Length: 280
Ligand SMILES: NC(=O)c1ccc[n+]([C@@H]2O[C@H](COP(=O)([O-])OP(=O)(O)OC[C@H]3O[C@@H](n4cnc5c(N)ncnc54)[C@H](OP(=O)(O)O)[C@@H]3O)[C@@H](O)[C@H]2O)c1
Figure (cartoon, protein in one colour):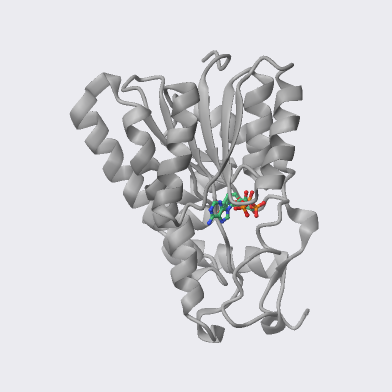
């Protein structure tokens, strides 16, 4: 797929994976609409994208709170006024958590998390879908997580939000295929493991401030993660696994769930410090 001149809309483009994806698309001279709440951070990303494209791409920083439908509608209209179509949409905005369900003190953060990760994705797509060309080279890309494939400790509502996205995408894929057949846009779920971003430090606290922290040394660089998402986008795969092990474990989940639960617990114990693990 030649990305030059494609119109790409990215949510959560002010930081982390979304910012790095914006830069990578801009390097390919794709036009990018950058959505997030922090306008100053977006302006900085926009300046970097213009530079990365050699000033050959349209770059549109647009304020958007994905939990606010009026804001989503306005941002999508702002993008499409300039770009007419959304050839590729990357639904990436998200927040995380790090708390055992039985340690949670404030459940209202669960509503916030589901609102950003699940409904926020649906909100933006709702307004953008009419502008996505019904062609097989259009892409609807949802940034899920390894937590959308397996159960992971400390992440009940985060897993729930990502698993909800998998169901949403599976249904949407059937609808698009039913309506548009071979002209249906590809619906791509990408599933990063641990990536070095501010996701964990800016996590919702659920009323329990010291719950769990990643040991940063094991996280994948943002540029590498964004590159895998870019490749999955171009390929139009249904699920973009980040490693062969994730792909293999996912295909075995229905057969040996207890073994895979054990692997996830062991993996998290070796990668996190938490009061529960006695290494805080
Ligand atoms: N980092 C990882 O280890 C990892 C692993 C698997 C999956 N993921 C997924 O990757 C995606 C990006 O996360 P990241 O790691 O890049 O985290 P990040 O650096 O914290 O970036 C999160 C982005 O989401 C935006 N955002 C948060 N709430 C928003 C809202 N209400 N409205 C609009 N934008 C909002 C933030 O922008 P503003 O604050 O400016 O609004 C920011 O641009 C998430 O969906 C996350 O679940 C990350």
